[in-house]
Length: 474
Image 1 (cartoon, rainbow, N blue to C red):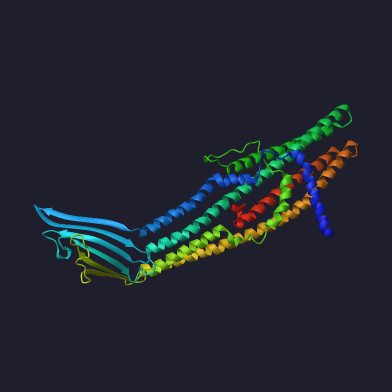
Image 2: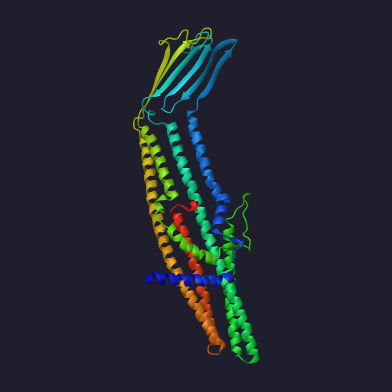
């Protein structure tokens, strides 16, 4: 109980310090740019987010293309030869072919052939010959073939595309979170140094006035001037870092016309007070529902393994001999009735058999398929381990910075008290300007350090969501 009271007291001191800074940093208004609003804009207009949306369109197009292999086809062929006013031959055929999922192809057509030099195998009755038929694979292609493999792979690609989209969105949001919190850090560091420069200049003017009157030694004027210059130098560095951070954040902002936006200099990040409060709100959100194994990139690799398994099954099917049987019953048409002279004895059939003797190509294809599966599986295992380690590291960092914010908030308040006490001693002549400047520099450094820890905590928080693959849900 005592420990809990101590923690509550320390955190209260931290908030008290942050609230004290709020007047210096400015109140929240319409010029404040929150990470939530940045996320909304990135999801809508960022080019990578747009590319992520295209993944589903690519997958849908691939599936449409694969299904096209099962489209019925109509075809017609005409081959005729005329020489020396003689009709050597005329071969006319029209056919409709209907593929099915089970590898069986149905077809029907019409032949009408004539000519003085027509081969016996091509002769047809004067009214032509109608036929219907079926082609059945009894060996290779019975359980799987190129067409079915393409459709199965494309269907898996639908889920793969969804996870690719989530992965790309997850990635761009994490990049955005990183640059936002760097902008947040740079902005508030600049604010701390701005306030410090004002205070140092006021002290310099006061010391110079006292020195002119003879109440202070002239060396104090030099000391005060050096402090102003040192803080100005730090401010110049902070201004440069803020410009870089602003440009980096601008690079993440796009409008509906796909034009990159320049972040207005009037925009400011969310106030330090609000961020510090939200840090405690983050605690219950980090729970067992966030697991690195659900990262979308890992799911992409799992779906690729499924596609490779389909490819391997197809390669294994190539080991079988090719044995296709065709049967086409024929019927001569009379008076528009195609069944008048139908007989089961009128037919044409055929068989195709083919098998390589050494199967080197087929065995090589299977070996390559196995190697691809092994490679992808190793990649999946490696990425799973990498993501898990980074996830756990950021969990550790996030928890550590929670404690650091609590501790360092109290430290900053103590530095402030020491500075104020040293100023009072200086005003009554019991301290030197050198000591006051040292106390002030320590206070400035402490404020900057606290700002950096807060920014680091937020980066860790969003990194946890990133490595759990859940940033798009925020």
